[in-house]
Image 1 (cartoon, rainbow, N blue to C red):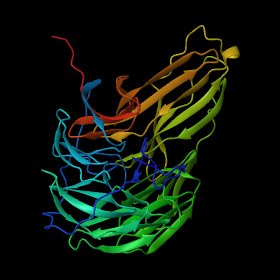
Image 2: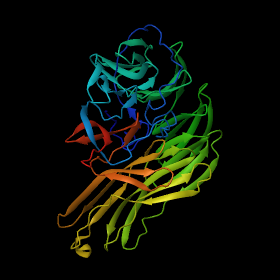
Image 3: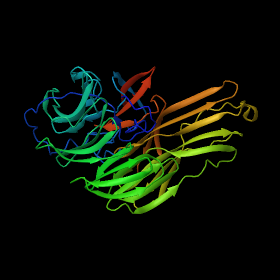
Image 4: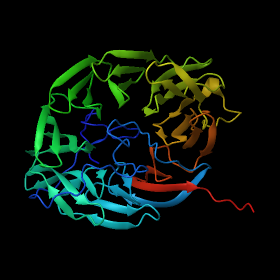
Amino acid sequence: MSRETSRRSILKHIAGAGATFSLLSGEVTAAQPTCRNATATPPADAWPTIGHDAGRTYYNPGTSGPQTEVSERWTTALPTRELPTIAGGKAYVGGSSLRALDVDDGSQIWARSPPNCRYTTPAIGPETVYSAVAHRNDDEQTVTIQALDATDGVRRWATEPLVTGESVAASAPVLVDGTIFGLVRAEQERFFYAVSFDSRAVEWRHTVAESVDEFAVTDGTLIYAVEEQVRAISITGDTAQWAVNSPPIRGLAAASGTVVVVSDNSITALATEDGTERWHTELGSVGEPGFEGSNSFGQPALADGSVIIGTRSSVFASVRQEGGATLYKRDLITGERQEIQDAVLRPAIPDDLDFYNESPYVRYGWGRPAVSSDTIFVPQYGSINGGSGFNSARSGLVAIDRETFEVRWTSTEVASSPVIVAEDRLFATSVRHSESLLTMLEAATTNDT
């Protein structure tokens, strides 16, 4: 996935993610035969779009996940750093090609790779996947929405170009009630669009002057974040509904009439209908004895009326104590704190490390949760850098029971990266030696008899 050089490119890469905005290029062609059964829903255990759903909740209630520590079943290289989408035994991956992989062994089932094209992460409908595709032709680039057969990758139809320019970009689309929503850019022009399944034509456009950090669709509303403001428009037209000022936003998710907006040190819950504040909470400094540093919030997940979110800590330790990063669960409507979980995978500190003279720098925290019907799966990392060259690092995955908030298992075999839970499996993306990888994880086997 390519990105603008600015830290706030049109949408941040989800490393913790949220809705990723891919600066891609793709293909332009005439419309093909109609899409079958376009308005139905994908299987209940699928992960059909980035963040699982148009609200970016990272909650998949239709599936479970490994109940014991996991091990790697297969790993395959990816041409992109985007998260895949998963349904019907296939993982779909965008990039310079659009590929479908078998979730059982990672083998390629089909690939579509016309020249000079790049595909966003596709959104999955029944029998069909939808991608925003950018195509370069000489010095001109265009973006179209394409529908491809989920079985073999054959293109069913494509829209007319949504945008044309020397440099174009497109977000991964989302599907809501027979309409495709997304964001495109050409040079300094950017706008949200709504494309009908039936007509394959743009029903409306909503121009945005600033770079967009996050967006979600819920309750008939498209909500998006620019650097210091949250805005909402109606999905039945480009009518602005409300706008609320906010600190710089690093995460956004929406469900149950509420949008949760996350900055580095605060969480605010707004009513989707009119943007009024339901609750707000601030995150103080690390504040543990012997520590000086900072805390920041990570990315949220929303599940059955709860907000699940972790913090990250960067501290200078003057005494040998732990502190900082915490995983919280709060009530979505009231903000009341329901549960709290301290860091599990802490960086290892040697007993003989001279804290006063070495001044080690400690970083650790929780990543973005992915939530199944019964389990919260949260990446975690930790590192210590000592003044004399001592370094220690740990990362992995923590599985937490949704009801009791107790740790079920931890694994250090998993890179600290966002995970996807679908079809009772776990999938993780990672980067090793500058190569992007997708790994399927399953419950580890034992030699017990």
